[in-house]
Image (tube, rainbow, N blue to C red; front, top):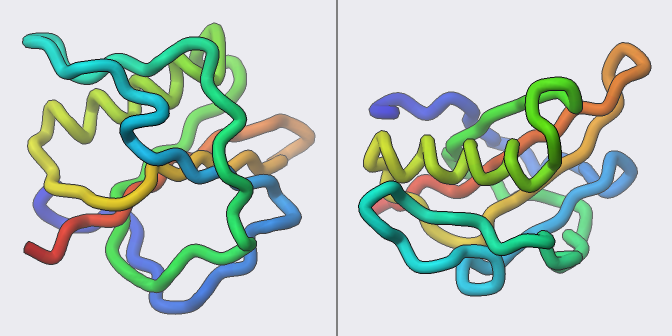
Length: 114
């Protein structure tokens, strides 16, 4: 992921769609040779204040039908970021949106400046 997939330059209001922020230590088990694993069940997380700060983020979206559970989709996103070696910081963000009468999930995390 040498180029950011999503670049936010405005404070985007996201509260009405449902967004949760997770500190890494609250959701990730120790990294092994196969990468990080997500704690199950996923804790409730911190409700976001409704905005995501401007910045460069790694981003991935998936549909309900793509994975057997929210946790599996979120873990797949986190492991992909790890696999690609992207340097990120801050909380892992999980956003729920409704598109075409179906639920979609979006994973985001801020790309490190250093």
